[in-house]
Amino acid sequence: MKHYIFLIVLLYTGCGNPEYAAELYNKGQIQYMDKNLAEAGRLFTETLKFDDEFLNAYLMLAKIHYYNRDYNSAVKYIDSILERDRDHAGGLYWKARILVISGKDDPDEPVRILRSVLEKDSHHIPARMLLALVYEKNRKYKEALHEYITVLEEEQDLINARGNLAVLYRRMGLKERALNEIDRAVKVATAAGREVKTLNFIKGEFEKWEEK
Image 1 (spheres, rainbow, N blue to C red):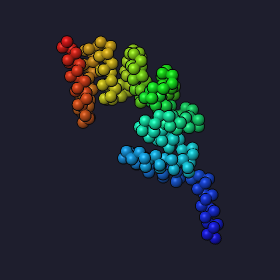
Image 2: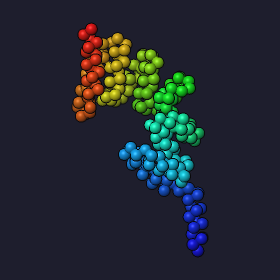
Image 3: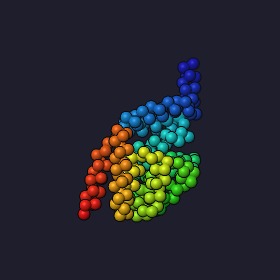
Image 4: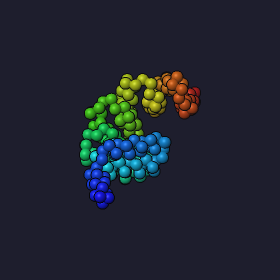
């Protein structure tokens, strides 16, 4: 009888258990939020043993490898997602992000990926923000400006977007606009109780340039 029960357990664990996979995934999320990346990675890996179609587990493993600077492994996990769902917005966004930070392959590939994300979901703010940064990095300032303004039309209180836009204005030689935008960023951050040290530093640099 004991051998029979043991056989049932083996069959049960071998054929997948989505409910238990979800439980493991939730535990992994807690560890991830607490920045225990090694334990989170173990739990997400276990999740896939019980449900190898759990796409968010692949995504979390990709993020962990990204933060550990293991970009090749991160891309492999993302590709596992895209093999199953080529339009997965999270997978596409993170693949672009990994490609940008790793600096590998075709430099235009992140742009193509991010634009495909936005074609499917024009409200995907992280994708639009990253696209703006990529354009700015490539000195395509008008394109970057368009993306930042589009973001702020949706979310006026995004501090990072306002800070980045201020820096972009300064690079474009639009000093007054740069100062006005950094002032707005400081006011929004102060009202929200957010850290303003970096913004005030940027503002101070702008004011120095203005005096020259």
